[in-house]
Length: 185
Image (cartoon, rainbow, N blue to C red; front, side, top):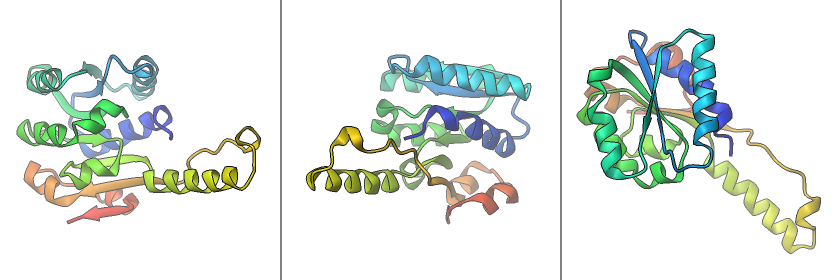
């Protein structure tokens, strides 16, 4: 699964979606071993385009609530959520917080958008599971796992929820809608 490599694209989408945002935030789980790498990738991408950014940290549901509660005071106009198992486990909570604080959030997986989130961009889980099944089949037929090539994701999904956009009072730019793999109405 690609995660870090997609952070710059998520930042690009956030800027396009919330063009007037003074600051775009990155919500990370500080207990994730990849948090520092993810944050550095986000900051580096932002520096290239001179976008002011902030980092929000949350490793518990209470910390997640506190991070969103502090958005307005920090002039944060959009949030990008790190690809992290903890955040996958609190999908509904993140969607509810985004709605409560009326902030556009870019999620790493389509499942967030299916739960009512605004937008996601990430590698396709169904495609990854399909590839895992193929590899499992090959191993069961006698291939040695160490001899199989390492595969990178080849399918990425941009999913937009227009119902959520309307509830947030956000007009999704046509350029994003044209790129979307799925638009939920």
